[in-house]
Image (cartoon, rainbow, N blue to C red; front, side, top):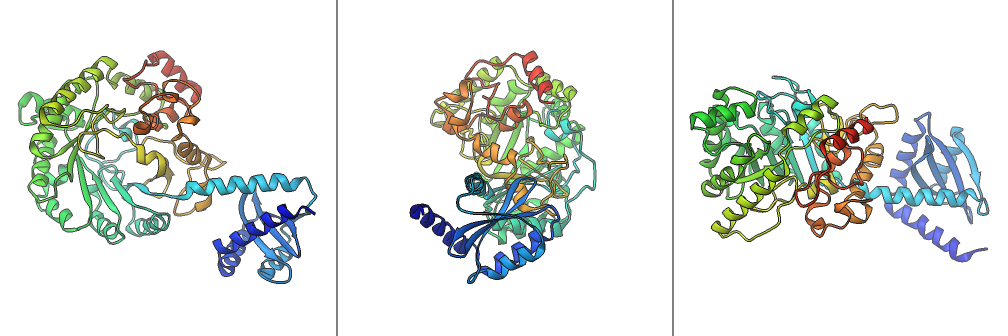
Length: 482
């Protein structure tokens, strides 16, 4: 008898007891036995003790320690009476080693279960159709309705909090078009969740009281609007801004007024900002927008938009044509550095795809936090990795839904685990990211773009610090992924 191995397995059994009390284990086993596809393997440890492995489609979903005479013997009897017991495995059975490896794999996957950052797409409605917006490229916006139900939001919020939730991004569509937005924000505030509200600012312009009402919610709230030109009141710039909103010049007036209303509402410093999606056509103005933000008291996120994984080839080609070239990005970075020097901001290396950012004043941190602990929910509860990232699909190709599907299936999904694993530089197979000295500030650029091109463990292909992959090669990579 291998006493060392026996002791290790007994320690494992004790850990299982500590993780879940008998009552919860029994409830979980009852739930699993309702699934007709579940099969159970009983693996004998010794001295009347065993571990039950609950398998589905060849994958381990749950394991539970039992004792024939003592603790959890009722669970063991319940499983044996169910007719789901596929086989018994004894200590000297070679299959035990494979099961132990699977159990260890399950343990590793449990690390993916933390969910710190919730990207909540609470509506599919938006008045604008901004060129380059991920929702425009996905072709799934409406002009009204398409709202998440408040009861669904409350249910997801409870799950989020249970899994270690810290911060929520309200996105859409346009979240201020949701009739229950303020109530949702109040619920988050009560739960101690930090709030980021991403808006096109038009409702803040049309409803002067909205800025104050958002501020009165309390808690830690940051509002991020839109701005692509330094002076929307200039006729020529007003016309260009309307084009980049995919809307009318009246929309520009509402947007600009909304920003003024927020700046005068009394928010603490650093809590009002704008996104400036950089395209070939507007990147030349980006440093001026950045400088206006420093002078007026709002931060500016100079962001290079990515192409969502669900885009068609024609939309991918549109995105490539919108994407600024490397010389334009280098020029923008240089001009921002000159502004920072003039304003007394310490020098730093801007990181793709956020050249200046939302996390620290004047510093572009990319989506570093999101890659390590984010999950997106659509307005109906369907889940994905981020706004432009992969939707999480089951084995039948149907998108998983956090309101209906197993949380285990979501949080142990291969694509979610891969996204988290790709945050280790050692996991990058080749290319400049594998050896880049700025890795810790970036974690490989936009993970969604790497997923769009079919290689989450490949290097980010369009970083201004390194050589770019040619356009035709990008298109070929996209085609192969399809």
